[in-house]
Amino acid sequence: MTTDLDRLLLIRHFERALLDLFARGELNGTTHTCLGQEIVPVALAPLLGPDDHIFSNHRGHGHYLARFDDPAGLLAEIMGREGAVCGGVGGSQHILRDKYLSTGIQGESLPVASGVALHLRGSGALACAYIGDGTWGEGSVYESLNLAGLWGLPLLVVVEHNGIAQTTPTELAMSGNIGTRCAAFGVRHIALPTDDISEIRAVLTPLISSVRLGAPLVVEFAVNRLGPHSKGDDTRSGVSSLRDWYRDMSGDPGFAEADGRALELVDSVVRDVKARPLSGWDR
Amino acid sequence: MKTALTRTSGAVTSDEVERMRVVENLNLALHEVLAADPRARLLGEDLLDPYGGAFKATRGLSTAFPAQVITTPISESAITGVGAGLALCGDTAIVEIMFSDFVTLAFDQIVNFAAKSVSMYGSRVPMRLIVRLPTGGGRGYGPTHSQSLQKHFIGVPGLDVYEMSPLHDNRAVFTRMIASQRPCVFFEDKILYTKRMHQIDDLFTWDLTDGLARVHVDAPPDCVIIAPGGVTHRAMAAMRRLLIEQEIICTLLVPSRLHPVDVAPLVAAVRGAKSVVVAEESTAGGTWGAEVAHVLHRELWGVLRNPVALAHSADSIIPTASHLERAVLLTETTIHDTVLESLK
Ligand SMILES: Cc1ncc(C[n+]2csc(CCOP(=O)(O)OP(=O)(O)O)c2C)c(N)n1
Image (cartoon, rainbow over all chains, first blue to last red; front, top):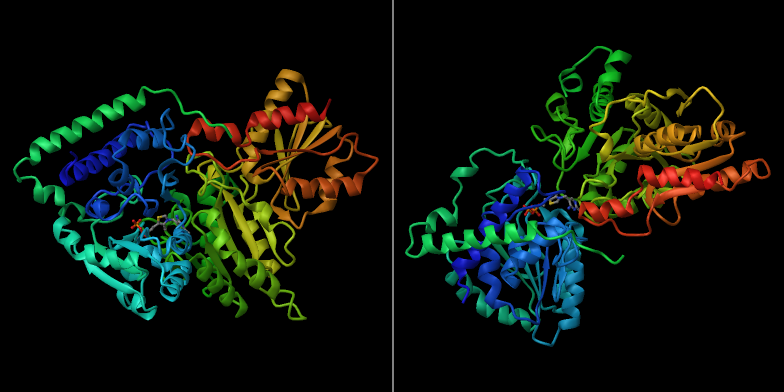
């Protein structure tokens, strides 16, 4: 059985491996890692069911891995190799699998998630959309919140508030705050820390049940982005002193073993995927 | 990047321009606009130093002109509208959209406000608004970060479409756009940023007349290739191969302004050639090239020996993986083959 810790570590080592592959010139294009933000999708995983739709964004590897436990399919997608989830066409930030979809345009997913939620209304399933704090600059976010509140949509908006958008600190981009913005639309909002997975689940379980009944919710998680925005473009100082669950948990019993297993798994996935032929695409 | 970034005053010699990378030349042009007019503003996402913009075109500018360079939230529609508002008051506004793909979010502000404002109120309202648009594929950024959307802005009354070119000094291009007092979209092929200005294959020479650059040999051409700035290097590579392998002589024409099309100089340069090819990175269908072809057909019907041929990317989204991306984007080979076909 995959434990929360296994999932957290899988995501952590997967992202590290990507940056490593980039540094060695073995990856093309760009990629946004979720280093430091792994807890959010791992905590949410058991609260979301197979009928729920998930909308991910540019920083979506953790969202995908927490849903599918499929590092090989994702790495093949990013490297354009056989077995890629979307044939290598979409790449890191454009993935469609079952009821999971990501796209690279900020704010674009919320209206679509609202449409999906409208379709799902009354079924008990919900649409969940991940966005960052910076994406609250986009007007489509507000148009969607209005519709979600107005129409009673089963929409769960998960905000990964890491205090920065690419290189722009939230203070330079946001007047007021997310909570009061939600209040203005009559949409429930809750802000949560990310240090305790069971605490997150305990708080969210009843709230998410009510989302399923048509009461939209915005959950705002405080997280730290521990890596660059994409690759090698971090303009911040002091990143290494930011709080990191990996460091905090490293003394826990069983951590070292789990860490070793995850590292080994990712290493073998990297070796396997690198050796595969290029992906094909029937345009 | 030193040349463009540390300069505070003093003219740049043409020799210095020769040695610059295109992004440095662009940076210098922006620098000069801001220095010449304290009311001129530059807005966009992540523009501040030390980052200096996603493609570094604005590096150093927020340090040199802190009151004129404004970093913005992720709000393409709003910041383009803000630019239009500044322009409405007579200020010069330059808006950077991080990837031109995101300009779709600002389409309303450009098409229904800025472009209409110079015309729909019964008298001309000058609008000095330039929307800068880093563009194009070839870098593995995937379907929503690699497009060439020029064609969607062709034929909008009141809007001018320009494209950055390694043969056009951006300082002159920006001066022209601002002097026009019309809203402009300025497409910048991302591949050009790191190329050198005025770097020409040694088989050819080049000249520039009235905004139209011409790359040629000293003989009448079999084929004239018309291409926007971003395609310059691919076109020259095709021309080289055609000349060396098949003794086919081509002339390349690179206009700075794509629309409205400057008809007269194109017609003059094309007359007498056996064929004409318009090459661009846009995907197939409703392209700029189709507009140029139409103009040339109208002017030269009965004179042209063959219909104007179009070379462009496939009718396809632009995939992420590089082997897939290469298969759909316009390449040197696409141009080479289209030229051969056009001469058959
Ligand atoms: C419409 C649009 N504008 C700009 C971008 C470029 N971009 C990609 S991610 C990003 C920052 C997003 O910040 P945030 O929403 O806070 O998420 P984070 O990256 O911090 O996870 C930007 C500006 C984009 N992808 N789409």
